[in-house]
Image (tube, rainbow, N blue to C red):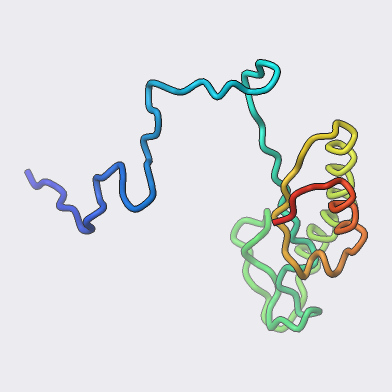
Length: 136
């Protein structure tokens, strides 16, 4: 019977560097959320539409990593219209649907945004600013 040998000094440690992977464990603290809330939600929107790899942007290949197309392959020197249409839906429709939902409820939102995507859709960038959303 062979026992697995640790390959790195931090293997099998629950605290290392500035990390603590155990936390409070079985003894959680009471965060005392406002109004006695039992659950806290953090809404984050990834805004990437217009920042994906695309030959129209001068890239050598189409996007293949950041999509719902499982096993997508990059199209070297060519456009992937299917991929582009999914990204276009996000900036043309999906973002605005989420914007209406969150702003109608005055819910705070964080947006993880690709700078190039915001540059290509100034209206969406302005709507994020107007809603006072955190853009990271």
